[in-house]
Image (cartoon, rainbow, N blue to C red; front, side, top):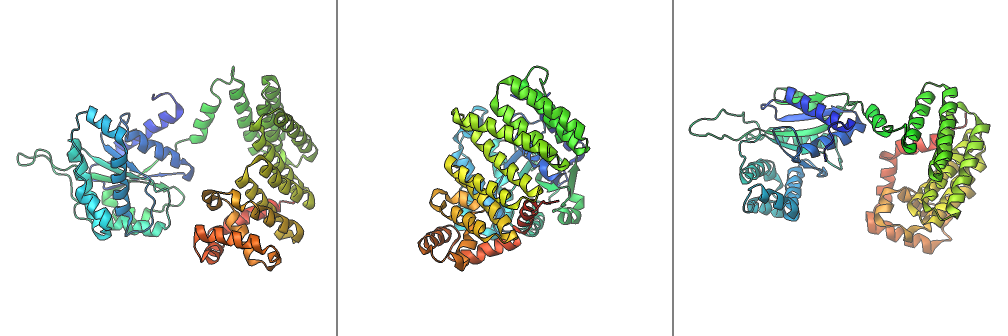
Amino acid sequence: MIHPHNPVMQRLGEMAKLWKQHVLPGHRMVRWMLKPEDNRMYEGFCRLEASPHGSLDNLFVFFYTPFQSAETYSHAIMEDWVREYDENTEQKKLLAATGVKGEWEVTPFRAAITARHYTKCDALLLEMIDSYRAWLGIPAYDFVLALLPKEMHSPAAFVTWLQALMEQPKWMEQPQPPSPQQPQPPAPVQLLLFDHMQGNFWGEVFERYKGHSCTLQYDLRMEQAIREIATTGAATDPQAAFRKCLFEMGEAAGKKAVSGVHEWGEKAIAIGRKSGDNNLLATAFISYAGMLFNFKEHGKIDILLEEGMQVCKKGIAGGDSNMRPLLLQYYAYKGSHCQIRKQRREALDWFLRMGDEAVQFGYFSQAVSAYYKAFIFARYKHFELEMDRAVLAAMHLSEKLSSDEIRSSEYPFLALEFIRNERYRPVSVLKEAVNGIMQEIYGTDWLNGIAELEENYTRQKVRELEQQALTES
């Protein structure tokens, strides 16, 4: 059900209104240039307009197709589209209920996909769009191909694909008024993209085709929307009242008003106690403590973290498994607090304890992250014993991690250290097992690949982790 008074729906309505005001039939490319964190609103706009609840008089088709290369991207979109048509039986039923009869004739497009005729697919993509509209019985309907690639290997190569698409003669055809000979001329086809306000990734091609493109910019005020949603019903709902305390604490911390942090922190604890919800109470303690880190009120931070940990441990002992992730978060906060106080060995102990306890809970990927944090800190401080303990502990989890968990965690970087470092020669059997796992996932040249990945793609992340691990002022 669509709730028009919901703050998010209000903003989606504002986006549609802006579209109606600025997007013209002659525009072949349109982009929403928003803050990077607003990509979910772009996604919501596309999904809403592609649904029966959209408010625009356009036919939206939306794809997350990953971008691999300029040469293969049109082919990849077509492949996703045919797969969606083949597999989405529910959509076919809905279309049939609206009067769309028969099958969509995708044979020529399927043949090009199967044969991998990459060079022909830019033109075939446009033919596919016309074919789809004809099947739906709306050939004169404005069509929007909306994209949000879930992977983007090269923005520069994506620009190359955009330029190749724009150079297709059919893409640049201007909409013609109806005539007796052609009462329903083909309607415009528009490409819709998301761009970062700070990055302006597609600016070059939009400037090149500025007569045929449109950039939409809008301040969606999402922080305000989130706050409105989160605090609705705060007068009667303890969860909403608690979230109000968190927002107020954050605002006070941003203004460096420690008295406000204390005021709203104590209110959050009081709400947690009154609610009888130990999870809420433990969250109040750790949130309050976290807000005080910038003020270095070490005594109060220690008290809050200790009390909160006791709440978590009591809950876990009573069978509440939901408290386990929160307890691990407390260990991370304790380690960070020790770093700030230059208690380096104690900080490492907390990070390692976090990893060990995560293993006991069966949270193996979280354990890897904790061990990686300890490894980075120990390596920087030249604590070799702790560094070895972190690496070996993570490697002993190898068989417990899925391929996806390995890819999405810091495991590959720890594996790189483990295989390359001669100190780990005595555990040759484990080294062979780790090497086999990494070869299966990343190929035989995985050492060079992960080394390059660590150097080129995670340099900033490593720097951030090291900086976080070395906050000792």
